[in-house]
Structure formats: structure tokens, C-alpha cells
Image 1 (tube, each protein chain N blue to C red):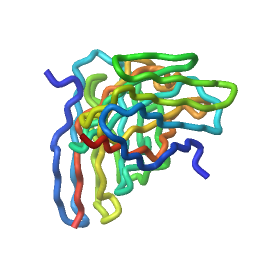
Image 2 (image 1 turned 90 degrees about the horizontal axis):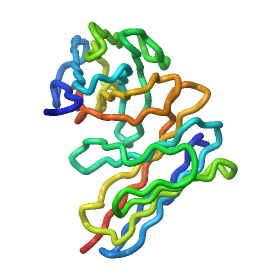
Image 3 (image 1 turned 135 degrees about the vertical axis):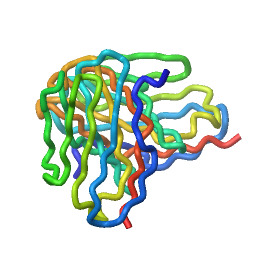
Length: 108
Length: 116
């Protein structure tokens, strides 16, 4: 079992839908990262959080340290949101551990 | 200006060859990383340097040798390339020490290595 699990692995949504991607982890962490990888291959950091909630535009990330769980929400989804979303955690082992990613396709 | 730049973007080579991938960041960050992304899109840390000092060496075969001439550059040299080395290699930098894992990451565009 991976130390970082994401669900769902694949997600297809219609434009305008509210989307939630989940990340659960089994290790102690100092920070959790949400990354976005577009079909062209580049990776962009969306959020880094260690508690509570962060919002950037239509994206919201939350983390519950006690439950070892984080969610990434996309409001009013758009086809340009189509990408792979990757959760990664950093903790006592001094290296980031990555989830396997969630492939999101938003259809017009 | 690209914040983290890698060269080359694509590299096709024969088994047994030696190749290098270069990475430069102009963000003034102290920490740089090399990650490998396999065919299933799974990312894994290979190396991390903080201000030219090796911080993380994640059980990578010693055919892989990182070199950091200064804190803005982290190059990856691979000797005796094998088929299994085919992957996309990402360079990244962060403003915080790797040990804290609390710095935002800035990635390069990736270098796709294909070993024939």
C-alpha cells in the first residue's frame, strides 16, 4: 500500500461541475503539496499547506491533520482544468512522497 | 525569463552511452532537486542539494551522479545508460531547506530520456 493514496484515479466531469480530489496519507508530515501536471508535461505547484484551508481563484485545498487527509476542490470547472493532479507529502524522512495522481478530464 | 530551465527537453540515445541533463534556476533558491517520473507518471525523488551540499540521495544507482557547481545549477550525469533509465526527469527548486519540506516547489519543464 502506498504511503500516499489519491482518489479517484480518473475523473471525468462536465464543464461547470464542482470537483473534489482526495488524498490520504499514512506518515507524519510537515507539509502537503498539491501539484498540477498538464498534458504537455510541465508541473506547477498549486498549494503547499500544513493546516486548515487555502484558496486560489477557483481552487481550494483543505487538510485535516488528525485524519491525515487532504482534499482539492475545483469550483466551476473548465476544460482548461484538465490535467493530472498530484498530492505529495513531506515529513520526517526528509523527502517528498508522491501520490499516483488523479487524471481529470473536464468536457465542454 | 524561465524560472527553472532544463536542457535538453528530449534526449534519445543508445544503451551504454553517457549523457548529461543540465538544470539552472534564477530564483535565488538554496535547494534543488532531481525527480524521476516513470511511464506510469509516478514521481520519485532522486537527489536534493542545499547550497551545493548533497542532502538526499535516494538509493539511486551510482551510474547517476549529480553535480552542483553553484547553488543555481544542478546537473545530472548518467553513465552506461540502460533501458530502464527511460523516463522524464524533472529538476525543481525550493526556497527552503529540503529537510523541512515546507518550501513551495518550482519545477522545470522536464527532460524526456529515451534509451534504445
